[in-house]
Amino acid sequence: MFNLKENSIRRKTAEMIKKLSQRQISVSPISRVAILNNPQSNLTFENLKYVQKALKLSSSQFDIFTFKEKNDHYNELRGIVTDKDVFSLSGKIKAPEILEFLDKSYDLLLDFTGMTNLYEKYLSLSIKANFRVGYFNEEELYDLMIEVAKGKIKPFVDETVRCLKILGLLKSDNGR
Image (cartoon, rainbow, N blue to C red; front, side):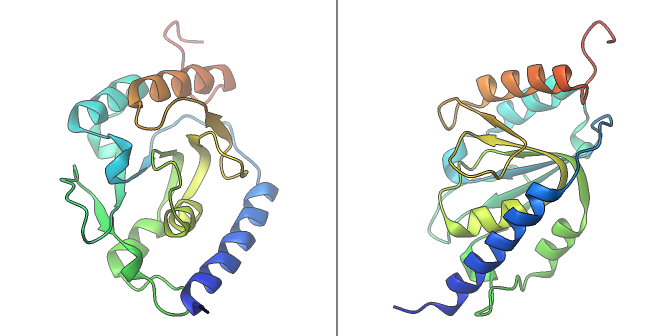
């Protein structure tokens, strides 16, 4: 069946992937982090505290965006919650709070979703982030892809922090 909304989002997603591959990453300290999350990601309050401690940032330096379907029973931590109903038939986002979130710029995107659907992919690509980290997948959506089992937050964060230090995006423990 022809679905105008999904076709429009697919087209926009392809355009965003092309733009993403052409952008330049600046090496600057991380001070603002966007987290993309869904009910399957296993991001609990304890895991969020682990992320904050690992990145040496306060909770005010994080924005959390949770993608969930209406029937998902997920007690999100905080932040914006959405589902595919926030998209118009033409594929545009119609919720002002989501547009406000997407209007901000971030130093780092941590995508814990594992890209389970087209809408999550579109939202991930819509987040303006200097450096993008997600689970290993077949598409070039991220600057760094971590190959750990989906939902294993601590190994994902540990490997991300290790790589960010090597790349100079995060200060190492000895100040280098």
